[in-house]
Image (cartoon, rainbow, N blue to C red):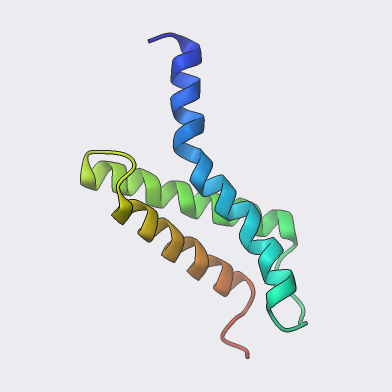
Length: 92
């Protein structure tokens, strides 16, 4: 496998985590009540991306395969929980 193939596989593996990490802080600004956020948007994106990559890596290890629905469901749940914690969602 060439270097470009490896890079393509790694970027494709991380793309769902990056998409959620970028979309959730943006959606939180519009959907949640107006209140002070615990961190700036780029910190939220970075933390959500790290959480998402961790979940995808763990599911790859646990399930022995990438792209299973269970992995994406765990990704959505973990990143949504991370965003809820970053947005201080318990202080409704």
